[in-house]
Image 1 (cartoon, rainbow, N blue to C red):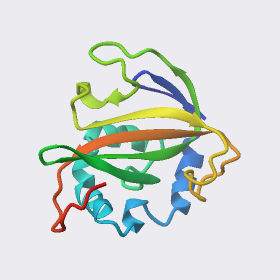
Image 2 (cartoon, rainbow, N blue to C red):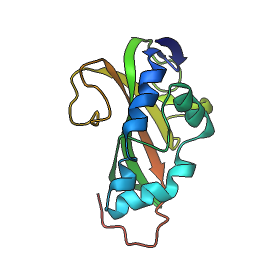
Image 3 (cartoon, helix red, strand yellow):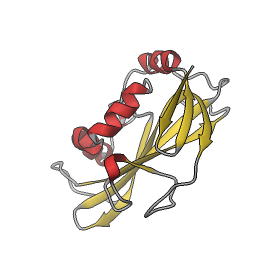
Length: 163
């Protein structure tokens, strides 16, 4: 287990076990989904996760192109669509300090972004999560769910059908 400081969180993560869990996953949730909203997320993936988020996730043992779950929750502005999803890590949230500054929301805004930015993630300790943890993860050990939220454009050649 290694201790990490990420935004307002202190995380104790078993990077080796997290990497081994992802190695057992055949692919990401969105890659295996047949909805057009999933296809839009996959088409946007490279631009959805800022470089700072990519580096943070990789340091924690998470391949950022392999989300455990993603869901389209609707349009939020002209040309932008809201998605939420998560990654799993083996470990525990040790501490979450109160957020400072413009937002008291429990999200880590990457690279100094403000709450109106297009991407953020947060961390929560989960215990006994049989379904959403994916069979690749042992649900008998503490897991951290890294929830992300993103606003992305509709870029695929398929009609938007709503959430």
